Length: 441
Ligand code: GUN
Ligand code: ZN
Image (cartoon, rainbow, N blue to C red; front, side, top):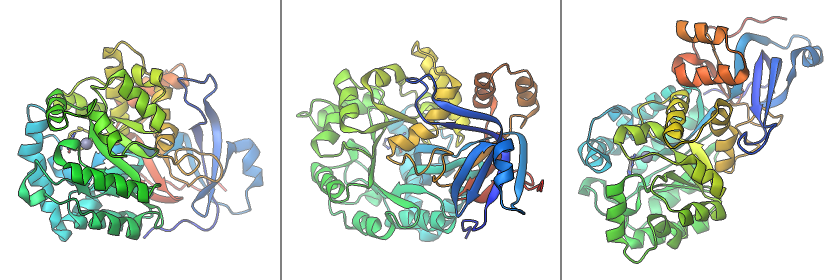
């Protein structure tokens, strides 16, 4: 178990943090070239200029020397599936055959607690290697899978949200549950806001839930209003047509969820590709959020998310890897593909905006502003150290970057887990590529 370090520690590096969305504010970020981050009791105590802050440190405070590196808040991945780690990069012609051929048989194995425990450890290792300190995670339908996920996450003192998948029709018998949501409620009572764990009520998607299960899900979400809700919506055109047949009385796919009370703050809708203008407006008006998952959408050929339409409607957007349909755990690689999807939709996604979306933007979309996604004093000390020279090509490209935007763009386009020099959670080092501490006083 890694506990928050009780005594202050300091980290010297360039610092990057956000206080607004760069798409809507000119002065949205703070950049400190020679900065110092001071951490105590698992929280950020101060962030500022090295020259100003260093003299205020108590004598003997260790200072890790990360000069030449960039410290940002840890990345937040708002949509991925822990039991799908082992089937990442499984080929199929689209979402529905992919679910039948690979996903359901793979998730079946997570009924075995030992398998789920081992899978959870690997999954968390992989997140931390990629600089992801918070994720909103789908477990399998089995209660044991969620138990394994939370136990592993709590043992590392990580701020993670997750939930057991709900599905009671249109799935193999071996993965079917029911409209009795006792397992989910037990998990909420045991894990929600227990330490840094948070629960997400997780109907897989409308086609695999009966109306009775969706109604019960809405009741559970009302009874526990600060839990998360996560599901998929309008990912693939075949799926949308299927939902139209299953729920002919509903105005749209998204309206199925609204009808059952599943649109509210802390509801995260994965994909949102084939929405209409009313849907985007309802997302904004209900305080729900979108998890844009570009590597998954390109991999499955689902479609191209329209960030500009979401922005125009005022809907909150964050990024998700959607592993295992997503092809990388890296939020840098997710930015890379989000950039290209934006270009194909005729818009432009600056690197500063992408880093905002992966940090403060995601924290806001999850109702966790002030807690994570920032280097502001008082926030939990979940942060990463980015190495702009992690590979020969990155080193060569960033050596002549003319601006912060160019440096971040190179990191997003060329970077991956190798660019994560270190990951800290609640002030404890939880991943490190090479020795971190070279105390300078
Ligand atoms: N829709 C329903 N289940 C899934 C899933 O596991 N992955 C993706 N990408 N879409 C889904
Ligand atoms: Zn998904």
